[in-house]
Image (cartoon, rainbow, N blue to C red; front, side, top):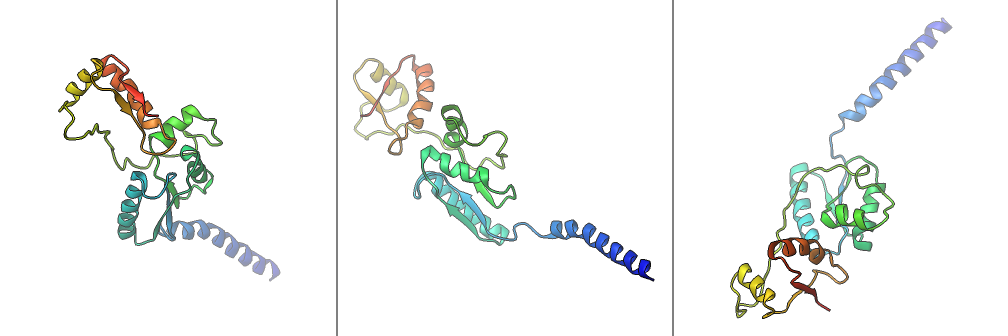
Length: 188
């Protein structure tokens, strides 16, 4: 009789052990809030995009989506937070050129950009524009570059945030290749 009871306990335990992973898989995703990390200050273009995305995800998934902005070190602080998070899909990053290319080529990072991250989706493609006052004599890019080559205009470049120079740096090779000269001088 004792062996019969032990056998039942064993089978019940075995059945529970087999059923446990299946029950865990049966939970629908997401079962708790999702965090989108934007490693840049609130109010910038990446943050604005993340907030629109979070609102749409909330509607589609029926779950809260939180946008956090752990800033600093050209995005490496926020990116590192995501690299250390559990790989469960509840903490994701809205990264881009700066966080996943420039920083990897520039800094010794405490995480591996290839091994620690999985691309999920391309969310946006953001073009770079040349914009000037309406009274500026050149009316198109060709005229602007000609004026720069002839040194009729001093063409200065700037970045979109204090201390950031990646926008200017990453576009200089394209401008140099297109017009055959370094036309843009750093502003300040």
